[in-house]
Image 1 (tube, rainbow, N blue to C red):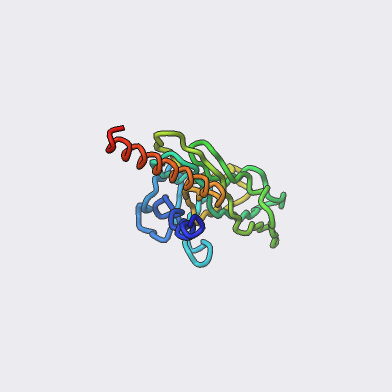
Image 2 (spheres, rainbow, N blue to C red):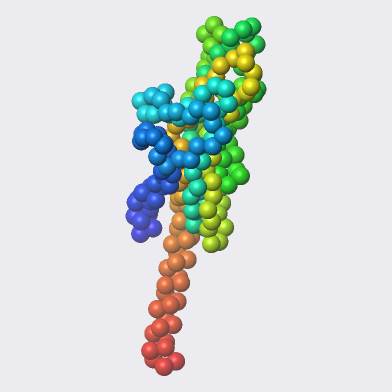
Length: 205
């Protein structure tokens, strides 16, 4: 019976962010607050033909979404990539450009120089789309937390960079089957105990 109940669980993993895939490109950008930005935009540089958020030289910026999360375990993340073009002497990808995602202080991503699969064509360096994910635990009572996308460019004027993000998400983690079985069996024991207590009260015990 427990295995049969497990089938519908993926429906619980709905994205809790609004417009995390940037398919809604209305202005202002639906669902998001823009902070510390000299020019955020959405473009068709996203994955699988979808839209991606792009920061523009010279500063980059942040997209922020505040969301209330009930107590539980959550997974958060998204897809990130970058293009980096030297205008002068080619010195390779520098460490100044940051592409990261955070939720309530938990951070994933980092320097684009640390991304895997970097390709070079002349003075242009490109990273492939890379998926980052992390976990975040919300304690009893829940709370409101900030989901933050930070596409932060270096102030080095000898290079131009485009920093991209797509498919940003927060989902409630689905328990492993063994954990789920324990939870369901525990709930069953509690329900049985409640029924027995009510029956005893009805008999005047």
